[in-house]
Length: 182
Image (tube, rainbow, N blue to C red):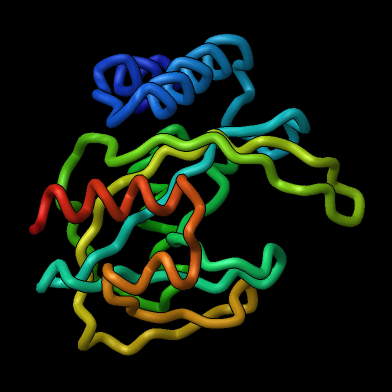
C-alpha cells in the first residue's frame, strides 16, 4: 500500500527541470512532512493533488480541459481525497474529466511538480494545490465526453498550447514534452 512516505521518497528522487521547479519540489516535500492530512481537501491551507499530462499516440497533441470554475485551460486532474496513490488519482481524474477509458502510463516516475494558488470561491478560502503530475497516453479516436466541471475538452497540438494557456506551469510541461518526443 502506498503511503505519504512513498510520495515523499518519490519526490526526493525526482529530478526537477529547473531551479523554480526544484523549489516547488522541496516545498511539496516539506508540506507533506508537516501535514499528515495533506491528501485531504479539508486541509484549508492546501493539499496534494494529482494531474495527467495526456498525449496521443503521435505525441503531437495533448488533451486539455477548459475548467468551468477557473475559466482557464489546464491538464486534467484533481483532488486526492485521501488516496495516497497519486498515479491512481491522476488516472481516475483523467477518466472522469474526459470520458476516455483507455490510458497507458508512459512512465511510472513523476512528470512534473507544481504549486499554484486556487482563489477563494464561495465558502472555500484561497489555498494551494501541491500538484504531482504524471505522463499518460490515450487515443484521439476514442470519443471525448466533457463533464460538468468543464466548458470544453479538446485535443490541442503541442505548438498551440501556449495560445490557450501561457502560464509557466503549462509551458514547463510543453518544454518537457518537446524534449521527450521531438
